[in-house]
Length: 323
Image 1 (cartoon, helix red, strand yellow):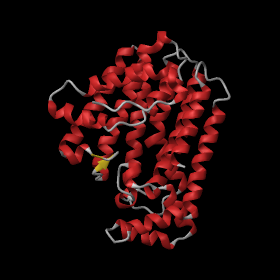
Image 2 (cartoon, rainbow, N blue to C red; image 1 turned 45 degrees about the horizontal axis):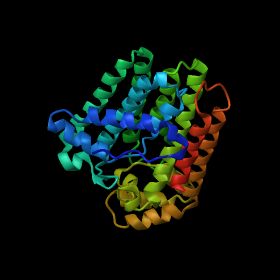
Image 3 (cartoon, helix red, strand yellow; image 1 turned 30 degrees about the vertical axis):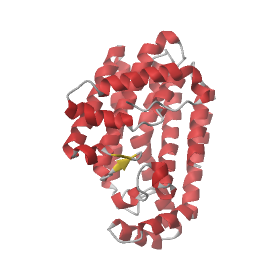
Image 4 (cartoon, helix red, strand yellow; image 1 turned 90 degrees about the vertical axis):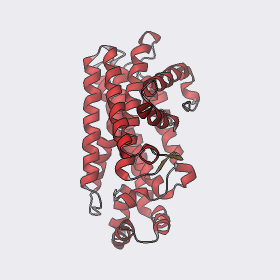
């Protein structure tokens, strides 16, 4: 049984849309041989906020006549997101996600590869049903950016000299791309102009970057009960994040300590505590707030029938979650 998305007061009118999306996801993940459906349903059961489907709906005109293609698009975007979670957990060697064993942990590396591939394929198979080659192309482009972002991250593993610009570029690809395409699909399938599509795509990119920065902060400051995974996962996997970059810039000796712990040395919790309290982490939070503010400015132009108030609430609510 999948976990229903939480009720957000500002999207109360969209709850039937989100419920339909959840039903689709359950149908897409289940109903196959158990080697596929069991781990796929485990991924779905881990829940999540369904932020990307909400972005699809809030970026649309909200017309019931457009509901079927929008719900399908929202489910397709979420399927791609689910696929990336399965593959990312395998690559990072993560054992838990949202307090549950990862697919790789519960079912093995082979199952994680296969299920991730299946979810990707299912996303595109379903999106073709909306009859919009442009929509399929947009999701394909976003998936390409996701893959390139993951490659960027792997190439930069352990590179404590990573620049802020390189980090932000990676965030735009690895996280921003899917937020961006969710917004673009919402307005595209509702007949929005090219300008509206570009504006909403830009909004999504900036919100995605902010989300990733704050998630990286939470990796240092959040408890396992809060995050569903162990603290310091980024350090252990060699993933260099903005809090690390800014802390090292101010206190270069921290680079040696991060490298020592990443190589298997003791003191992970103490290092996380130190970084969480560091001014560099506060500066990273501020960068996320700046990205959200810039995202909000984008909504002042032509955004078609998108619900600017709801989109702003999604962005600010996300920041408040990490506060």
